[in-house]
Length: 246
Ligand code: SF4
Ligand code: SF4
Image 1: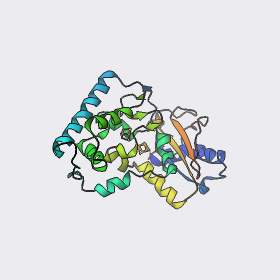
Image 2: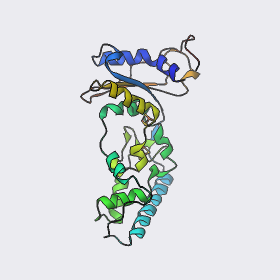
Image 3: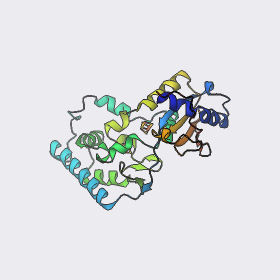
Image 4: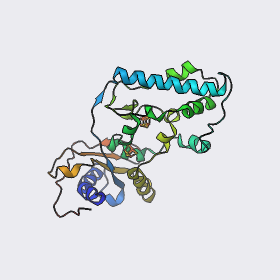
């Protein structure tokens, strides 16, 4: 399936590269990512209430463990890679975001039923960084980052431009997880550093419509300087019969 996706999107990746002044794909990091196309909607009141209840519960759990608001909590016992976690909060190279912008957050769908993966450990991490935080300040901070609209059924922070929660406030997994498409793009960037990136987001079910122009595609480029372009006018080529069925 991977080879099929690569071949079906090669021409549009090449075209996107040319549109940002790169004459051929050999001169830029490029790859294929998943792609989801799910409408945005205001968070239903029931889901917002459930999220707020979860948030207040994990905050209370963290404070109960630390026995008061003034004590600096111990680094989460269940998170032995605490230093690693802090390192993973750092901003990432913009060029890698080409994959996630093209994809529109396939992995964040899993955060829908899990309240953005936020746990007591996430809250204790915030308190470890700033021991003066009160329960109300923490709740207000997390609630303030809820977007006006989020991807239907997905994580409460899955806004129209991606995650609205700053990296330092996210659950560990949200900063450490990289899908295979993103890892492959990171490898491609390492092979061609400083060139920017082009990524074709392609729906997993694209083979269900072999016609040219099928609505399964979102092509994104990021220049070495960090300029992002969504190449909306590029359309998916037909699925040719001579492509491998792997
Ligand atoms: S990590 Fe992968 S699945 Fe998640 S948004 Fe980025 S490209 Fe999509
Ligand atoms: S908090 Fe952000 S990164 Fe984590 S699942 Fe939600 S939208 Fe995705």
